[in-house]
Image (cartoon, rainbow, N blue to C red; front, side, top):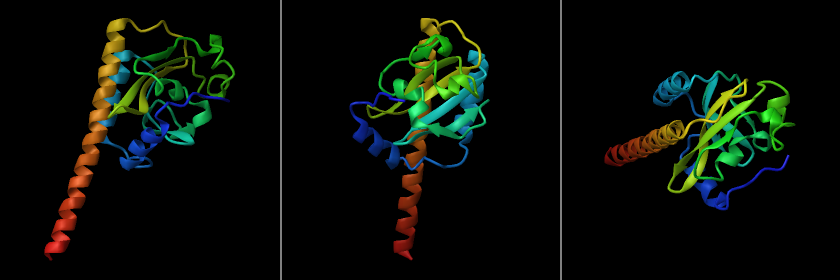
Length: 178
């Protein structure tokens, strides 16, 4: 399967890897936010997907058993190439996705709506609403809300890195002082 790659892929990968977030444990703040999003948007699945060279890894995956998928089948490839919402109301009817294994098999994605998670103009991933039933397009005000929530996820991720960097600096300073 072919997929789009952002023009700034090298910078995007550098940013993503600098966060040291891939393959880390649960983040209570992000999980709590995703639980609220799941309720607000009344969707079966909410995912915070971070897209690296070969996969999309899920920092949070409510309603979805997998912790990652191969990048070549990721709907999020399309989300990270834009600045706004990327939405597929019925994946079975979409020429790009109708043969995607995530559509033809488990989890049987029918509806996908992603908002880019952006740090310093690098879309490192997406905040995604996923459903096993087709859904109508989100109204504009709900799209704006989802974009704002994706910005909140970006803030939580960048705050985590700042705290981790600061604790490393404190540890280094204490080690030198000893």
